[in-house]
Length: 376
Image (cartoon, rainbow, N blue to C red; front, side, top):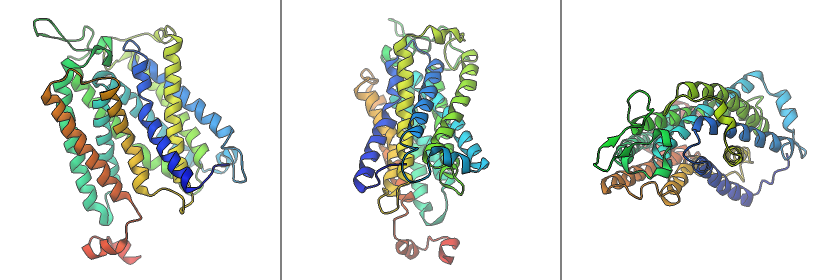
């Protein structure tokens, strides 16, 4: 693997990763509101795996260190299975996130899913002298979900037509009466479905981190490139199963045939591939940064801020480029902004809690060291 590991390259990759992870979901919006998320997900997963394979057989196979193929051969079966499972969880999260985007728009779907992902991550890491910080992060994340969900329900009828799918859109008649989607399933409001699937998407994303990191960086781990390839193999496998299920038991709209996939335009398929490649590139770069030598690797504060903060970029794109709340009421905008404030607080405090560079002396003075750290 021939990768520059200088402080400048680390900072550059951090910025690029942030942009890629916040940008990929806009390709679904570009595909148009008649292109169902189940069909987009096929192309997304395939594009991600293709990019991962190309990267592994090029930059991942050059240099003096072990290459992609060597890492794959020496990695334990347990780590390979963990990477595959992590990819499956990622596929579940991405499919639910895109469906939440279809129902709520980028702004609300990303805000809710990022906050719920943070809840899972904080629960997994809840130990030691940073538990107080994690309590604050959890409280802020819960408040973010509450305010963003309230805003989503208030803004449902005012989202512009281009923001939502044709079959899943709630419309208002000239007389002011709410018109439900013609083929809606289950009688639930679109915003309620969007909130639920966005929360579940965040839970899935939050559950990805631990098994993925263990499979890549643990003993007999896969390493960056082999780990990312196996990860997206698992994502593609899960996407095929989940998408086939959801086209028959849809979250919104009526059931569709797989033939609808082949009726998509070349541009729609290309956008799915591009979205998958952008996401895979962001994941790969963030994983590379975690494998940098200690003296040049960015602090945990910035690594976590990049991974979670990319959602803030997607929210900004939903508001500025896609004008998702251009017609929303003042109360919906206030709830959105309050929720966004709590989300920023949650991300910042969580990143501080995960920053291992903080001095232990200050923690000892507060009496918050756990037994293992005191023994060390």
